[in-house]
Image (cartoon, rainbow, N blue to C red):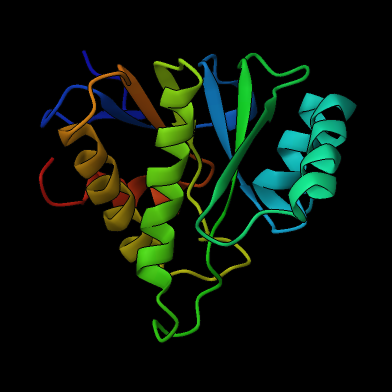
Length: 183
């Protein structure tokens, strides 16, 4: 019997969508919907920094000193500190500006660059939050479709990743994934 809080995507048997807390997921890497300063914030970013402890912030500060932060659509990697994952991949999603500032491409880049960084660091399992759908106001349904499309496009040319979990904190995002085409 299927758990009602897990949605497998049968198209590739690699993507699952769950409702839960990303800080509790046991995978090689979790993705943080960070801001460009990498110094913590609200939402999932704040939750990851709180649960992971000071080691994550310390490594983020070193990245900021070295390269000045993280640009929208890009990704960087740190330790996971006290989290059950090995790494945290920090990616900066776009703020929604009505679709007039290349937001869709930038959001897809968040997924591509996070997956590329996971592969570069020998990760085979990764968990994503719903990037940019909180205070950055990206339309949730569009963000869900972009995430699945970007992940599937990445998987077409890379077989390193064995399990991708999209972790929806709220029921609204979870229900949107249940209704996506291709399920």
